[in-house]
Image (cartoon, rainbow, N blue to C red):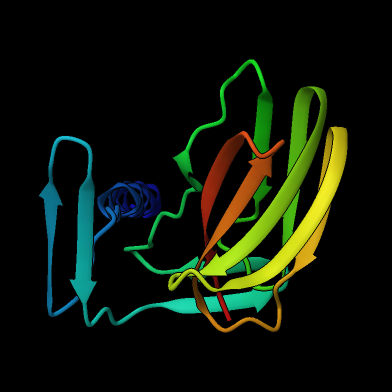
Length: 163
């Protein structure tokens, strides 16, 4: 009798474990998804369970509907010139830049706000370059990081500054 009861209990317990599954679900008052040819927009309003933990330079956001940020290069540098990468994006304090060119280049770097006001200007030169820029004092928002290479080529990145 005891072993039958134990077997029944074990069967129900195992069934209970498999019955408890959760899928990502948003609990909010409104939301929708729109999809076009080359864009997808998802939004929610009034999410109940969101937590953000910041320990610069990292940020962790907990919640079901999290935004996806990517580095947005507005214009591309020709591959035969080289490659520029900017990270992390979004950032709250330090922006890192890696510039790898096929030959020696003179580069002017400008950080502008959305109205086009120049906030930071730097000049560097070389073939394989890296630079760090502190943007901790800037207010939260969107900025454009523009690279001018030998006054001939440009590459622009949209940067998202967090608190």
